[in-house]
Image (tube, rainbow, N blue to C red; front, side, top):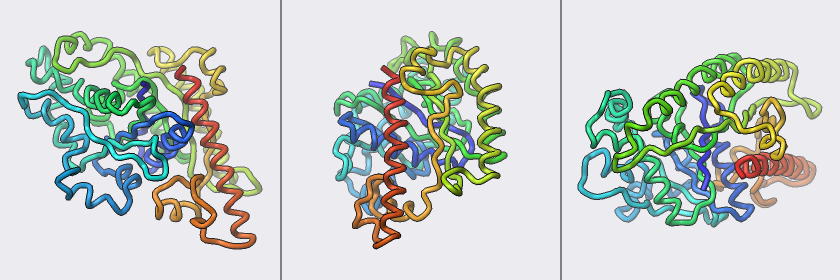
Amino acid sequence: MKKIVLFNHKGGVSKTTSTFYLGWMIANKGHKVLLVDADPQCNLTALFLGEEFDNYYENPETCEQNIKDGVKPAFTGAPKPIEAVACKSSPRNPNLYLLAGHMNLSEYEANLTFAFTASQAMMTLQSLPGSFNDLIEKTANAIGIDYVFIDLNPGLSTINQDFFLISDAFVIPTNPDTFSLMAIKSLSQILPRWVNWKINNISEYEHSAYPFPVGIPKFIGTLPQRFNIRNGIPTKPFRVKIDELQNIVDTILIPELQKAGMLFTPAQYSRAGINSGCKLAEIKDFQGLAPKSLGVNVPVFALTDEELETKGAALEAQRNNRETFHEIYTTVANMIIQVLI
């Protein structure tokens, strides 16, 4: 089982959409995939459940089947171990499962921060950093999961740090804009700092009830997206920003990640078809397909002709768009599978 986190502390870069789409595509290839919603906004949960969202949290049978209640024994000191959470599968993609989020997950932030920063924290606190990993692994093993995709909120919280550090690999979704350029520069310092903390402190947690997992998350690549195109290529303002973004990845981010041991080997990238700049794809704006996919809780590339709700030339254009997105996400999914072998 491999855990992949999609992270960028800049908002609006399609982290949730990318998590849902990549998980869906890999599940569609016959692998069992677990989506983990670690964002208190619960956008991934809403995207997955659709009209069932409210009932999920109101129904006594499912209201405690979520990430916050899953780790509750660790954070409340309950005299029982963490247990696997029952997860719903997608009606349209039975290999795809959801570990639902919870809007009050951030209530655990203070205790987790203290557990990360207190020197020789008491044993109960030492169990907290590894509790999320324990929940994910128990839940995933109960289902027979092959890949876990984790969606985080846009911030630099200790909870985000925890989920990042328990992962095997990470993808950075981004946009071609000025703030995204700033964010990549920031991440080039923050992510190695997080990894350095783990290297220096992991021994403090090895004898806890929920040990912190060993290993360093490796960089799979970036996903620049949500730009407009003309004549099949990004419009000039976006093209300029995409090139600037790639330059920062090449000259700042990748060198810093390499120093921290956060890259795969050149042979692994080559085998996966990932170029030296680690750009997995350029994904244009979904435009008219987006609201239609949201209405039926599937990716744009999984929409049926009936769900496109158009005719004639408009239908043909949307079919072509659907196929383009299918090809892009198929390629990226294959890259992720191959680099993690």
